[in-house]
Length: 370
Image (cartoon, rainbow, N blue to C red):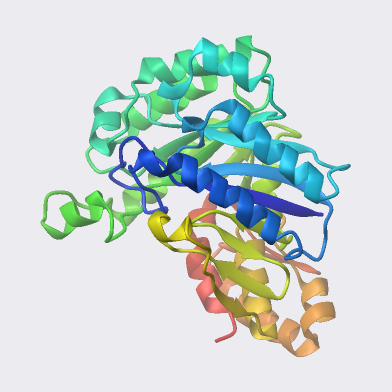
């Protein structure tokens, strides 16, 4: 099974923390959409596995596209690939784009999963991050989607925002849980140099959250959501039973995926490819950067993705795909970590306990093959 990702790079406003490829040049949207259809047609042979399990519209702000345009992409995917096992079609939406008219039109499409960027239910925090919706708008947007019959809704929240501590986070978590959604993604704020927050940090106008507080807020999120019945199945992701994100899970499982659009990445088992063109260039013709993965690259990729998930890393798979020498090396390295109570080493499995997943990068750095 494979996946399709379509990157809609347009935003009405740039959030202070976001470093995804995006632009406010909305006048280019029609041309970019047509260029994406052309790219999708041209890249039909990139994937070895033509059986599509998931389609995901990310961004940017895909909800700036009319639902009929979303459905046109789905129809093209159905024409070019085997979609007999297609299970999940997700669109990312902003709360202030959700109106009754938009939801009515969206229900006429094939979209069956919604991912909403709420980020916080504190209006001061939302303004600080540069979000263009209020807490009340987020609540009302979820209710509209539920009233229309959507029963697979994911909400994004952000924690670790300096100046907005555990009380604000508790408000957001309580409000999010009261919405009755099926999935919650909780991300620790990361400040990148290229963002407004990055520039503010460089000027001394804001600071990063201290490590101790980051860990405390991570545990606060973990405790609140797991006690409410959500499974903590990946570092930043929590789902009710049977409501894991199938699309995002495919990335962590090494499944092939085709990314379409400026800012999208693709992977077909051997080659990783990306498009980072400005949209003015993208609409004239697509150019890709790419790399062919070595066996060491594939091993490191497996270590990085598997240890982010609750199931962990299969040592039997490592031995089968990369040899007994690599398995033995990993077991030696893990022996140094077990006493730290970060890692559990079972016979054929290595995993990081969910409460310590915030530290997964530290563990991964010690295990990858340089």
